[in-house]
Amino acid sequence: MDILIGVIVGLFVLMFLVTAHEFGHFLAARRNGVNVLEFGIGFPPRIMAWMKDIRTGKWRRLPRGEWKKEKATKVVYSDGENKKFAQKGMVFSLNLLPIGGFCQMDGESDADTRKGTFGAASFWAKTKILFAGVTMNWLIAIVIFTILAWSGMPEFLEGQFTVPVDTRIESTPVEISSVAEDSPADQAGLAVGDKILAVDGNEFVHASEITDYNETKAGEQVIYTIERMDDTKELIVTLNPAESDYLLGVTMATTQSRSYSTWSAPIVGVGLTAQLTGETFKGVGVMLWNLISGVGSQFSSDATVRETGQEAISSVGDSVSGPVGIIGVLFPAFTAAGPTNLAFLAALISVSLACMNVLPIPALDGGRWLLIAIYKLRKKKLTKETEEKIVSRAFMVLLAIIFIVTILDIIRIAQ
Image 1 (tube, rainbow, N blue to C red):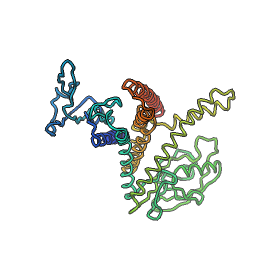
Image 2: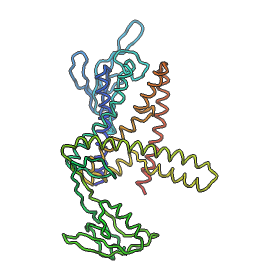
Image 3: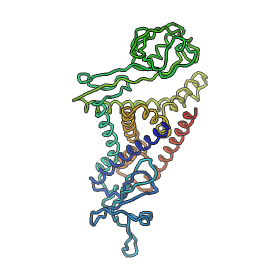
Image 4: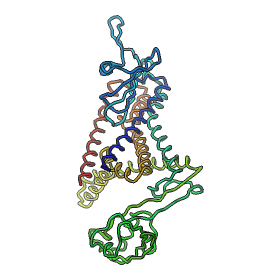
């Protein structure tokens, strides 16, 4: 049941973030004189639709029979022997598939010269329209992080951005959530609900830090200082050897440190968004390097080099998560961890959406801008056919990558 709730929450959060991205395009298009044919929440088939009549400026709900027609947003009129289409009004629609949203602008090809189309807009206007979506995602992240900085920001990153003079940190101990039978922890008397205050006198904030310390003490005795029912105890634990399946035999839940800010909350919001943006681009760079170097090493005659390359390629697959992994794994886990962690995840994904759309891939905003900019610098006309060919091929490659990542997600979940 918890997983189902997490999946539903994940779908709505992703739909909100993608729709907000498209709303950025919508606002920028309208402000720069580009007509919007339709703004939709979700993807068709439609559930409901409304139209704003250009002549009257009033909204009216479209009858089901009308909005199901292919040319519901246009009216045909005759000009001699040629048929032309005139925009009748902007459509706002609610659609069945909760996988985002869309903003359909008039004349989205750069070659279109009709007044009010995207193609007829100036290069600066196109730049603002194309990057308005990523700007909206960054703004959402800034707002969420600002609120969290004031109400209690979870610490997920080492060296996470703060303003030290206006930061109060509250830490809570790592808690044991399960103990394996006949494990070193069980034999020493550790129990579910025990809070680990220290190990050999060392205080740790994260469960991973305790695990790392245990690895340095494999096969040795360590002293766990725990809190149980408001009572403090010291228990001697003899860890398993390094080659064992586990050293201690527990799972631990880190209830996390949280930082609180007052006047500096907006600064933290901007700073953390910038920090995560940098980390995201850095991660993409490392992933691409591992992929390229890993594939290249497979042509080496040295078996050790090929094995290292295979590990690099494997690390790429482990570091990438698609929609299935995000919705099926991350959101259920973060939803169960509480609204604060869920809000942090939403802001993190919003930053990731912004960064991904900036990348110079023709099917994405950054790639489309780069394509238009290259042809402008070359002083050559970007024809509709050329643009569609480049974008469609890039889109097919993007779909193939998403398909592969989805398969990897499903395999990881199944395992």
